[in-house]
Length: 180
Image (cartoon, rainbow, N blue to C red; front, side):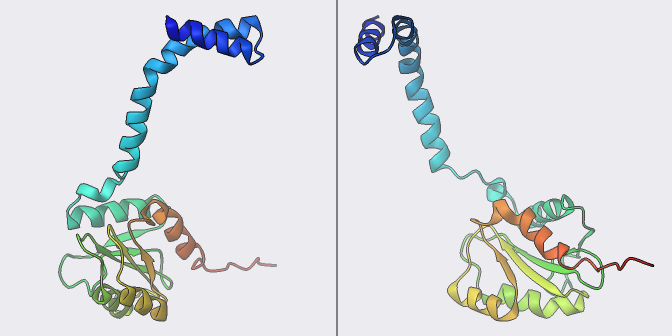
């Protein structure tokens, strides 16, 4: 009650009309009661990542990446667990397919993932490469990927994975000339 009266008086003294002062007085206790819940929710959202991939196994992470690729409207092939030449997911149509290596790891991804997908892409008839991880990449991995034109998608880029796949596969769409 004290909060309502005090907020109404302060609002009136600051130049609010009588009607607005009464409205502020009526709403002030509710706002004060909701503030701790709002702050707790906001702080929880900041402290805990909103990451669907956080609790997935390696195979489930591959499925997660394939689901995102399928949502782009492109054909998606998941390779066999063994003998995949370092390519877990193939996106797009020949001759310009995207080879994706998925790495669900508890530490930053090193150069071996880039080496595997770059070497395996031609074996899977792919012309573009990408490595996707729930973690980050080492500086050496970033440098090697840059040299080979391999796209890297780390945990901070995962929310943009769909748009990255679209960008890489759209530019590979063959140009169809108008027939005269």
